[in-house]
Image (cartoon, rainbow, N blue to C red; front, top):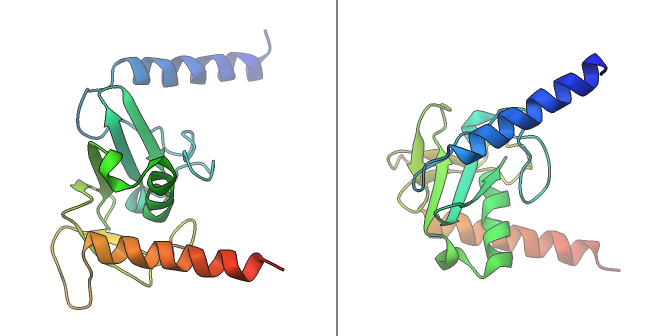
Length: 148
């Protein structure tokens, strides 16, 4: 077996072991730089913009950008299908309940949706619904520009 194949096999084992030992509620582990975003398929590498959505005890989706999570959820039926929705705080240290977090726009995020999660409101920050609406409206505008 080549070193590359052995490395790939070891990584697959790590991801499988992580998935099998995940909690049934709350945020799950992310292998930074290895897990892919469930919306855009980019590697999740910037902790401070990561998000997770849980639709059941063993059904967790991971995202590299809060905007990816919002758009993915819209495709699944909207935010109410999520039993839990987590976002990493702007420092990349603590998982926050996405629906209770505040958001600051104008950030340079992995997929350019531009929102960082805050544990408490600050001047100019917005709540979950306002951030969600802004992302959805921005996506509609981008889609209309792509049409001939």
